Length: 181
Image (cartoon, rainbow, N blue to C red; front, side, top):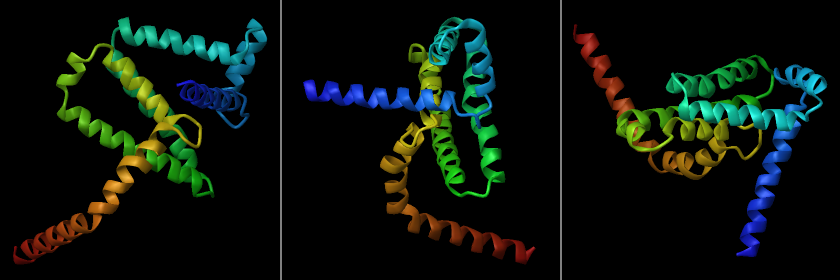
């Protein structure tokens, strides 16, 4: 049990270090804002970030328009960085954001077909927002990477050939129908 607690603590410390590093990364759009806030308040940017997360969490519990806020959080930053990734010359950032969008898309489809959950699960929008943030964390082992490697990729590898055949057959049938018109 003590070994598991130590592992969890190390895991969380790793995330904290990654967030701290990301908040100080000069290439990120938020760094100047945190520089200014840190300078004006004398409060460390990690604490400012934690406070902002706390306020956002409270709003996602008690606020108005929480579904919209949650979806803006899940789309705005990933879309912004995806555009940067598209325009960069490296492939690594493209892959990272493609993995995020695959995870986001699968989650969105599941959520659509289980919309009852949004009414039944307490604090659903807060939990969804936390999940999306975990999926987009600027770390190597963020949520979308873990989900992709452990769930999506094995399922894809197991079924992609039969899905490819179904798609090919559908294209052939559609082409045949279009040629007869």
